[in-house]
Amino acid sequence: MTRLLDSLVSQDCPGVEVLVNEDVRSRDSVRRVALAFQERGLDVRVLRDNPSRAAGRRRAAAQASGAVVLHLDSDMTASPGLLAECRHLIDSQEFDALVIPEVSVGEGFWGRCKVLEKRCYTGDQKVEALRCLRRELYDRIGGHDEALVWAEDRDLDLRVRATGARVGTTTGVLVHDEGRTTLRGTMRKKARYARTARSYAAKHPRDFAAQASPARLVGLAVRGWRISRDPLLVGGMLLLKSCEFAAVATALLVSGRAPRR
Image 1: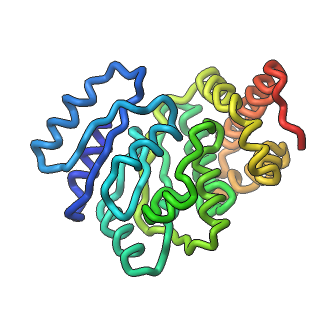
Image 2: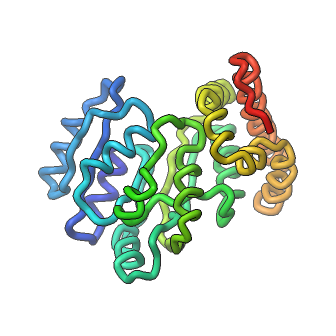
C-alpha cells in the first residue's frame, strides 16, 4: 500500500480524497502508514469495513464525498498525471466512465507468465474493466455487487455499459505488481473466486460462458506468441491459465454449484 499512496501523493491533482478500506482480517499497520502520508499532505482516511473486495469498494464509495470515484488495489501504483487526466476527461463531459490500462510486473518465471497474459489483454474490451466513473452513475446502478467475488469488476463494467454510458480509456496507466506468482497460489485464488461464479453466471450467462470457454486459450496463445516469441514463456502462460481453469472447474464440481450454460 505504501507504493500506491506514494504514487497518489505525487499526483498534481488537488482536492483528491483517498479512502483506504482495510481488510477486516488484516494485521498490517495501515493506520500508521496512512498517518505518515497525511503528514505529507495527502487527504487519506482509513476505514475497517472490508469483508470482501466488492463490499469494500462499495462501502468505501458510500463514505466518499467526491463526484467521481476511482477504485484501486493496494498492489497498484498510478502513473504521473493519471488522476488529473481522469478528472479532465469526466469533468469535460466527454466521458461518464473510464478504463485505465494496466501494466503488470512480476517476479520469477510464473510472474513473467502472468505479466505476458496481462499484456495479451491490452485493449480487449471483453477483459479490461472500467475503474473510474461518475459518482451519480455508480450510485444509480447500485455500485459493486457485494455478493460477488468472481469478476466483480467485470460485473460493474457490464452494468455501466448497459446504461449507455460513454466509456473512454486513459493514456495514463496503473502498474500492477503481481509479486511472486506460484501455480499453487494462483490455483487457490481462482478456486476461492469460484465460490460466487454461479451468481455471476446467473447475471451474465453469455459473458461467463465466454470467460469459461477453453477456446480462450487459443486466442491467448496467438496473442502471446505475437508479443513474446518465447516458446517457454508462452507455454508457461498457457499452462498457468490451464491450471486456473482446472482449479475453477474442480471447485465448482466439488461444491456442486457448476452453473448451467
